[in-house]
Length: 358
Image 1 (tube, rainbow, N blue to C red):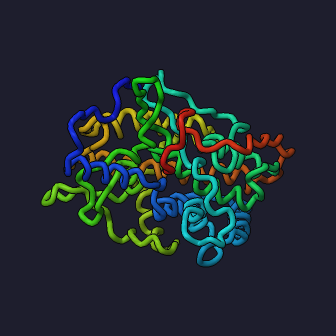
Image 2 (cartoon, helix red, strand yellow; image 1 turned 60 degrees about the vertical axis):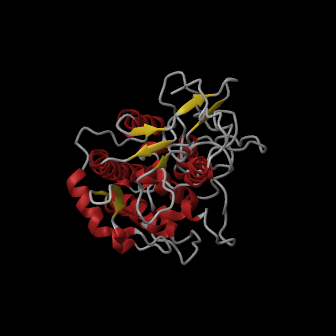
């Protein structure tokens, strides 16, 4: 949603309070993830349970080909590979690449900037989740791509990005313009400080909240949000930890019979964007020109089931995609490859600089 006013319009000297606020804003804009690791593993668990025998055998074989920071992946933990590329393991192939492939910054207003949705202007450091999944699909169907180097890599990316695209704040951003008409946005909520985040967090942002919204609760005594501590250890991946909850969520939030599972990547992103417009931003209490937000018990009660429903739907759609590619009885002709993008293109923020990675 475009606005002409700047973010802050104070004219008084910077006070200690304002300085503290600035520190919080900086910390809150640090890189976030999509669903957190266990959330991604729930998506992958549901998907794996719905694969046909051929797709299941292919998934096991391909997952073992992908190098991980600890050990070889399996079809559940592989869903964390793209986030593992952000870690500190310098020996991990492709470390530090593909950050913008996790999200697409559709605005909240029809007049906001429109992202490029066709591959060709992207590369390993630019693009979005829609263009990324189009490239991935070509490789899963037997084609080639300048950036997605193998079928194992394509499977790893699909396992993660199908989850990403179902998180509402991976398909939405609040845009505004400054006095010179220059666009910027809130990086999918990464630049919105949640002032009543978990008591254990010094700074917490809206994007982080939605990454973990599938396990959120509200602590009435402190007035703060809280998260199920069973899923707080991100130092290693544990496929068995999430299985009971994956089965519970699928039983509660199985998609309706009429829900489309066909791979429509732009459609999936716009579906998430609609939820961001109608729930994520519309139901939230903002202060300080959209830079601060307070989470209520009512908001938490909306967020948790919505996030769980999106995770289950992502699992079903990932399974359908993999059954149609890895599990195809007779693969068709390889599709045409997308071209490489310019080598000097960096992650765009509506053409005006790079947003914080999500």
